[in-house]
Length: 382
Figure 1 (cartoon, rainbow, N blue to C red):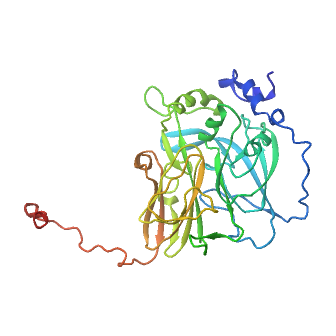
Figure 2 (figure 1 turned 45 degrees about the horizontal axis):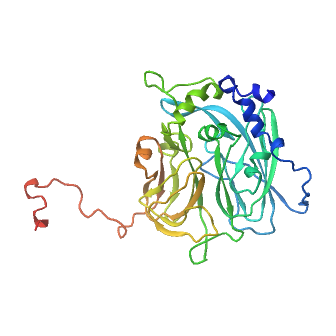
Figure 3 (figure 1 turned 60 degrees about the vertical axis):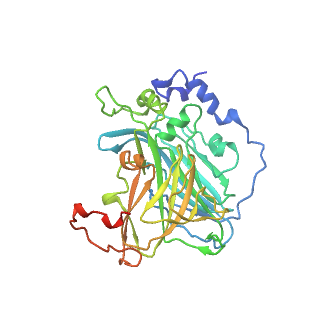
């Protein structure tokens, strides 16, 4: 049966819309009306205002009391974004940013999210929290049409960093994800982070790096195409997606989003926690000039962190965390160490660190000067 939902999906995929809607409709998947209610009336409620990545809302690293209910509000915004100087994407976003905002709570707390799908949008949307238990991570209980809102609550039972993303059903899932609809949540242990020996550790800053792979079609002349809305962009975008070769791989939604005037900043001696998510493809973060002092590669804080890593691995569909104390001033490049993706496709960020140079850690012993090519390396030969 064709419903109001079908009309909202756009002419590009009317043929598949009825089946898709039937699959995605939460009421047809499960009935929670007979579930035993939970009395959480005695718990304190804490409201948060989400902030745009790479930054994060104020939070405590150590829980100071009993579990609480953390209230978040998030609006789904469909809009065109500029990915590069010559490339634009009809994006679907959480709160207007790519990636969506990072949320932070503690193990044992409750997350209560109000999700809005404004009437000007064309698509159905929902949210799947990899940190949640049951109901497709909340996806089955959060499907909203344009002009609707819903409220989801789940208990944060597992500490770590986790991806969330839109998953409305069928072929819409990968399209919505690679159009920008992913983010991360960090669930801290109640007593905070600890190192490999169980000693407490803390961070001075959190930088949230959301990596995205984009698939933007080109015209016959090799120029990137632009579209009126997300519906119009679907057929040709799907064709590029199915080739599995991204046109852009970016940090925080755009080539250069975290370089130049937008570079991250830190001070010598600061401990910075890098939270890195990739909802669709594998990635290999590397901090040029630095290391991962403590790395929760799979992002799960119940596991002992690895130490002193040069490059770490982020599995597609996951988020990881790495803690580093900056020891030298200068410009650090944080990259995906698939260097083709870092240099040619956009997966690079910069961190500018203030401080005083330590010659014991590194020194230029001899400045560049001309040399006698005829005698080059003779003393080193057998």
